[in-house]
Image (tube, rainbow, N blue to C red; front, top):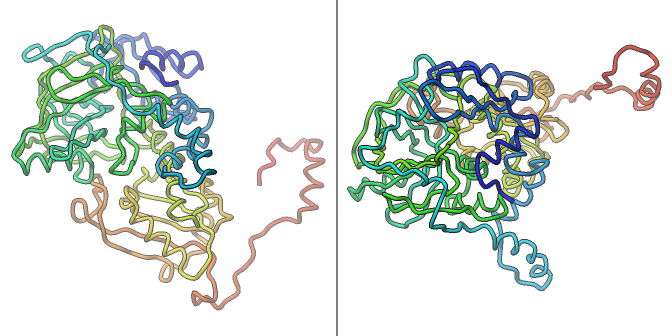
Length: 489
């Protein structure tokens, strides 16, 4: 069953040896970032960190809670992400059964689906303390200033909730908030995101857009806010699916929205149509500062919280960082959905060094001439894969999770003039290399073995491999040789 609070998740992390309590004083201005960045660069992402002594503030700061594959599994309460990858595909493409066998197979699925819809409650831990109007003061939260050239302190792990002003459809996304003063922040949503679409609709109607920000709900809700879900799927329902029980929601005190009852802190307010303010710079997940630009302004009219909240935050910068593991989880969880559309795909690797929207290594079961090009173009047409700046396609036997293997094949198998494709299209808003904001070029590379039908008339050489019998003989006596314990090839 799902975690009933972030505090419960912290206890689990500590019991598993995945948390370190930091009792020395560290400031939220750069110092917590420096400590956390060093930990994130350790092998396997280092431990989660609970900074218990933040001078000037009465709440601890939780960092790097999702910063390893083990902690991602703990956050979603599975032993391996592959356990739920197939379930997610089944959930996303649930269909009405039309035969007795399908109906029988649907019974366990229906039992799980029946328990995923949000549940409304009248009392909630996130409303133990209620501050409204002049009582609101964001400066009492230990919001981090992460990097020296940042435009100010930023709330970096917010779950932002809005409803479409015409359809009423809920969107839950994660958009950073620069704190300007005690009751206003920036709202950094890119034009491709769901929250931005809601705001455009409200602006067209010349209406305020109510918004709520949940800080520190349970881990499944936080992950769901980052997941690349289909437009018609409610993130709260998806979180309920991951938790295997409903997300409890409570009505806000000042806006007509519902928020996760288990949250640590909730900000309520609105965004005015037509209002913009300079936001940034911000040290971003690309490893560069995203430049300052004009973004909407979030006016906070109410702040509710637990009596003893924990403030969760994250930092982004040169990989590897905590967000890399959130993204790697998405890669594994949503690969079956991509393979449903493109069944020829064998595996996919969005390497941390490519900050996920810059580089993708794809292995395919190549079946016909030009197949690699078909796959790269198809991927650019799938949701957030449209932002992928470089896609490299390999044959099925290539382990795309092995960086050495993909670079070796890339260097050997590619004729640049023949195998490189350039296209124009949308690019991520953080892409500083494109000549225009949001629009630029992308590159596809066919690193597969070339066929005669593709115009390759020379003989393609075989990969060097040792005779299997010889390998087995040496394997049997290897330990007696005393050379080393590494039998990898």
